[in-house]
Amino acid sequence: MNLGVSTYSFWHFKGDKLPLKKYIELASRMGFSGVEILENHLESLSADYLKGLRRQAFDLGLSIYSVSIHNNFVKPSVAERDNELEKVKTMLNAAYTLGATIARVNSGRWQTSKNFDELMAKKGVESPLPGYTDDDAFSWVKDSIEKLVPVAEDLGVIIGMENHWGVSKNAKDMVRLFSAIKSNSFRAILDTGNFIEDTYHQMEVIAPYAAMVQAKTYFGGGVWYSLDLNYDTIFEILRRSGFNGWVSLEYEGNADYEEGVSKSKELLSKYIHH
Image 1: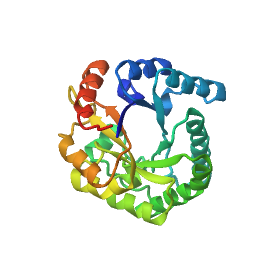
Image 2: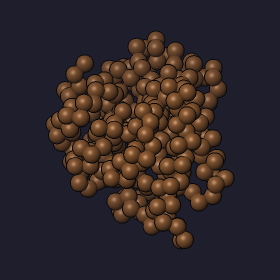
Image 3: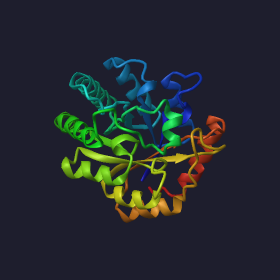
Image 4: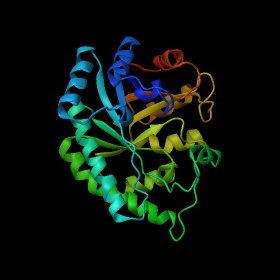
């Protein structure tokens, strides 16, 4: 396994953002093997900019292994879903230019919660929009992914579905998606912090489909919630399933970023066998 860090670990959607090059320098200085780039940190999608980042990472001895995309396929409007598809296609091409082999996608969700805090209070469960059902959402996500698979296969980039609320909020629904779309270019990204209930059982179910792991830590208490994660158990599950890929730190605590990321690296490093 290899240990990398998501640039999300240095910025939780609040406060000032540093230029992406600074986060890549930080990842190198702190001794990570690679970096996962949050879409919100990309300042441009121009080929020259992306190639510059790829070269910077190479010069620092880092791999850019993943790009994390923000998208939502749970939209009744075909036109809106088509817009999301075009956006994801653009981002898959950006991932390819950066040299990343996997791109995180979301299933999307109904967005019937007032805000993310309310969604978290409901443990990620939302009511469908009036006149629709969760089966509608599943079918929109399935159809969208099926349209993206040929693009991913052509680029050699994996579409990584994270367990991240909406249709992908639990392992059972994710397995339903993987069973419906049989492609080695559509795999799971197992986020250790997003199975709030029945955590380890759900990880066991999804681990055989996982192409990457996002490892959550909560030093200083969680920004939204804290899970008391037992990484002994988690890495046993991963090894039993034959997982040997990238573990991407997503530090989501209230402690200062550098302190939280340093402590997280120390915690996770002992489980990573090169």
